[in-house]
Length: 316
Image (cartoon, rainbow, N blue to C red; front, side, top):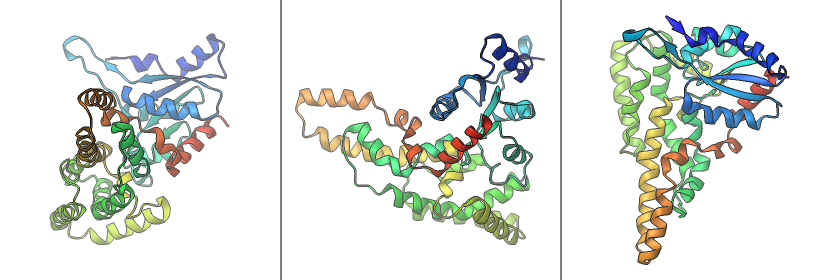
């Protein structure tokens, strides 16, 4: 097996920085995949480090018919011990920051200052910041909504919080009875009834309890620990579920119906010429694109401040 990463490593980055005369400026940044680059570039560029960032995604190449391609967090974590000020990594925290005393990945995340992470489950969780969604709807269709996104996220978090505790416990004991992908069922793309979501979560917990009858006390202890040490609570649980599931739920079950209703209401009041112009505007500002690059979260997020401070410490 030949790997690009075996040649393009922190030693290469240091030598490249020296040869290009940018020893104190050039920084190679490993990210999980290409779609993460925008997020981390925006964040790192906004931190006053005086550095020049060059982003790389991981690739593993094998020979001929056995060609495979590997990229992501696992590959970056393998490199973490060799990271330094010239070569850093940026990853989604997943469950590992919450369980930093339990998982090997969690121990690496919290002990390596050259490995930045999202604290919340992933980039997508941060982009779904409820404080920003009213403005996002305006950008998508030039219409105001009076929907209370903050209350909705509070209710959603309370509905899924007990199941989140179960999922973290099962992850900590390496059980596959509830995995990250299970959140797609718990966060449907066609339902915003948080009472219904809570019922689905309770049904799933009953099934898990039957399989793990002695887990309750361990889960209670874990919850108390996470509340005191990680500030995880019933109002911010949405930050720690699988990001892709949350993103799809918020986009398709919540934002799109709101935007469609506003669009239809508005367009019925327009002339034919105005309708064509308005439709073109909306089509050019798709909700998914806006949500995936919703950097307005930065001014609302305590997590963003934490990541920024972590970045500053690398070059302090």
